Length: 326
Ligand code: CP
Ligand code: NVA
Image 1 (cartoon, rainbow, N blue to C red):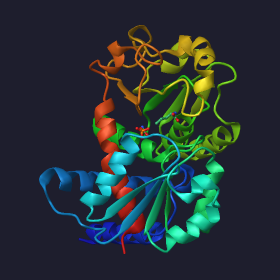
Image 2 (cartoon, protein in one colour):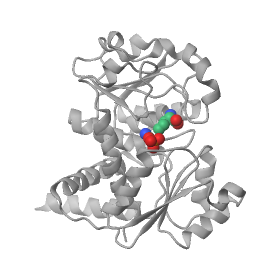
Image 3 (cartoon, helix red, strand yellow):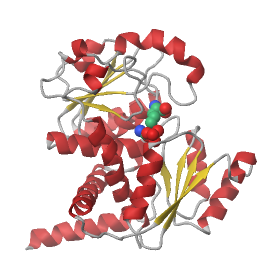
Image 4 (tube, rainbow, N blue to C red):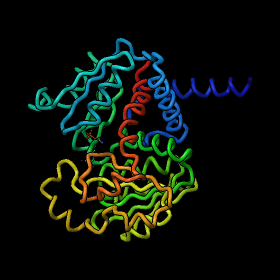
């Protein structure tokens, strides 16, 4: 009885602590809070599958600003708000005054008078920070050049579902170590006690600030984080293998050069022989088959990329509920 009460008290404390908070990076959330969000996501996923109504955000509106393209992020946030009883507004930066030079701070202040939360996908991470600084409602990072935390929350949920745990697993990330996925994976993995091994060519290593802070977190969590230029060393005995596109949005001009530099980091069957027999393969999508990953791997039996894509919906519903519910 007292245990049930303790769990209830902890849930209430965490819900209270997270209400109204911004979601800019996973580094801003502690281990307990990330586990709480994942528990909420599992509960909401179950409710959705069982047809149990869960209108926690009735009457609430999410404004969604997109300065880059999106399939998953746009659809999953919009559908998520609808399933929670609320509403979402899609705002392309081309159509709003932000695209014609209205300041971030004025945009934040004005939107805060209409909506209950703002999700933004943009280029510079500082833009999201500035928006959050001036908005009176929670701001959610839907991808910047530096971070993609909403995706990694879904990735953690997928790992938890497929592996039954996260702590102590080895996650290997191959390819462009200096992009948003690599950074958010590093921050998320160490928070839940996963060992993370990154294999990238010289010049494509993760941001040193992200890496050094994650190393400190990892030390407290008892897990290791390492960078190598040898994909075989990184993937050895990995439980989870992850990659991402070699040229992210905004880097289209560098596509050819990146293909040459990154080709030996392709996730293919030969490389995957060195992972654990029951490894799972993750990719945030969109993917370029035969570039960063072969069709044989992404369409093969170890791949869980569509469960991962589905989990964007459930993980983000948890986030929306926790940040925006009265
Ligand atoms: N993974 C992801 O964020 O996909 P979209 O670019 O389609 O939103
Ligand atoms: N690193 C990729 C992720 C896409 C979801 C990009 O920024 O284009």
